[in-house]
Image (cartoon, rainbow, N blue to C red; front, side, top):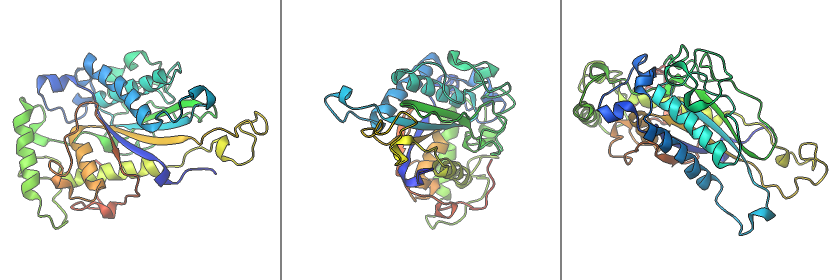
Length: 333
C-alpha cells in the first residue's frame, strides 16, 4: 500500500503557545511584524508547546498492554503544518522537539525550521533547511504559495522505515493570522476583538450565503470569517489528503524493511496524524467550518481555543463547497 486514505489520518489543531503580544495585549496580524522575534513565544509559551507533545502522543498511542516490553512500539508519522508567523513557527518547532524528546529520540525534527523568530534556529534546533525561512525570514510570505514548503527554509526529508516517531514540519501561508485591518497593532486587543466578533455575528444571516471579502462592520480592512474559512479549509484538506509513505508492516510481503521474513509479524500498523499549528481566530473558524456550521458563528459554534491547546477534528473529507458562508473560489490570503 503506497499511501493511506485521508480518512485514516487523524487531524489535530494546535493554537500557538503564549506569545509576547498575548502578554502585552497587542494585535499583531500582519507580516513582517508577525514574523519578528518580538512577536514570538514567551518562555512559558515554549514550555506549553513542548508539553503539548506528550498530550498528542497520549491521544495517538495510549497504552494498550500492561507489558509494553512484549509489544514493539508503534511507528507514528506526524505531519506538522504551521503558519509562518514567528509565534506559530516557535510553537511548531517546540512541539516537534517535544515529540522527539518524549519519544526518546534525539536530534532535530525532519524538515527543521531554519528561521524561527528573527532568523535564528529557534530553541536550539539545528537548521538544515537553508536560510531565509521561519517567521522572520523571506519565506514568511502569506500568499498561500508555500503549501509544500516553498521558500520557507523547511526541507522535506525521506521518511525512515524504523520504529518510533517521525516528524516533518513545514509552513503554509494559508494558515496566517486573520488580518485585523485597521486594528492591527491595537492595544488593548480585547476591545478590537469584541468589535470584530460582534460584526461577524451580526453579518451571519444563517442562510449559508457568501459574505463580503472585507467586513467593514468590524473595521476597515478586516478579513471576513468566510474568507479565512476558505483558505484554512483548503490548506487543511490538502494536508490531510496528501499521500503518506508506505510502511513495511503494511506491505504484506513479510520482509519488514529487509530485516527478514516474519520480522514485523507482530508490528502494529503505523499511526498517522496531521497537526495544523495556527492562531486563535483562524483555527476556531476552521473548526466551525469543518463541522459544517457557518464560519461567522465561530464564537458560539465551538469552544474557545486556549494557548497551546490541542483539539482533534473529525476525520472526514472536506471540500470548499462544504464551507457555508464562504466563496469556494476565494484565493488564499
